[in-house]
Length: 322
Length: 249
Picture 1 (cartoon, rainbow over the protein chains, first blue to last red):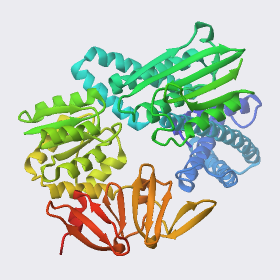
Picture 2: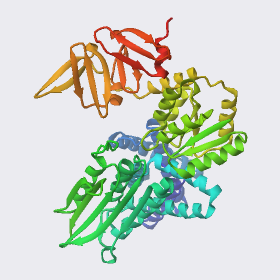
Picture 3: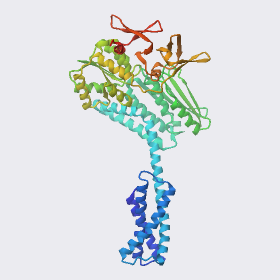
Picture 4: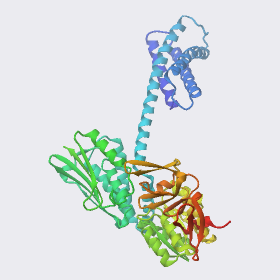
């Protein structure tokens, strides 16, 4: 149960509300007495549940049934111990009289409400943590350590020799990382977003590879706002570099072109790298298979064609109905 | 004192050059090369004492270039320092093989330590050969192969691994040579080598031999070693970096 101080405040507030309600219906003693009783019982209950949780399930979320068992025990103990404590504070005789049974009822109801509240809150926090973890994993998969460390090494070199270019490169890296992060958070993006991400990526890679990498990005204004699942093209461009251009001694060119053709959106990633046939370092085809799957999930009738580029190298063409 | 630097990323070779100028002013950087092949040629031409080789380069990797330099230059080969940005496997391998390496981005402190070590160490060819052999055996092992499956028309021939005299690399294919004949398989030797049991030894860039099938190692007048086999007529050349394995006890 995280955030104990928050829980303490919330429970104290809840106890106060109970004391007010009890006084309004004319139950128990004065408002002051009711307040002391409800605080003593409620806070004892909170401390018992919190301790039980820490002791029994130190590192994880408890299973529901055993946890409800703990709550039941804590409610009984909290009612007995809390009332005794309150009687002690107020100098009243601790009598398990007529009002004690009603106090137990109030404790049980309040305990159930409080437990339900905190259990849900914990579950929401847990889900949020899992969501962020999944995002981080996706981000990690997309930003390869090899890419990142090499880029940082290049930036380090530029800072000494050409600080102006270093700043420009840092800007491109920043754009790429920001766009990647944003892409992991959304379901849809636009071609303009995707091309901005590609530009950042290619500028950074261009710094690394120098004259060995040339690239061209063609996006007609009319298609800029077209819908696209985020990070769809980036794996294809990454493949072109990794398997086509980086292993090729003289390097080459990668072109990404978007156009409209017979009512369909056509996206083409073409490189002049080693190509599949010429001993390109054997890609496992995971990137391409992923793109196929994502396209098929997002669009009815989308097509993916991959093959040797007439200019040498490799081309992947995506065709999406508009 | 002369050195060459090879890195396909121009900014990084420049950065290493600048850092070396600070850390080791007496060292002359004789050439900066963009790939492994040119590094081998420059090493032969310039005969430097040291070569700083990036691992991932197009065409020929730093490790391949190092083996090629050792092979071509023998005793005259430079001491090799590997350069890498991020590669868990490579840095671990360098530690295990006690090979010198520099991490990118180059930190002055670390580079100074490497320079001190390079200055202090004797860089004999034997040490380089030992390092390269150690690096060669450090690739991650996969499951041990018991049989080689070679396609023969519609059938697949099963060859027990101990029957194999040697494997010979042929581009992306491998020739499996037994006493009775030869078969071609599609697995590259590089991948096959990680699956072979004890007793198989790389003796050349393109040859892995079954030591049980070796009758004798013969040294010619130039010091080149070749292997005579028990059940095959041809002899197999041994790379210089593996020659030490066949010295008389």
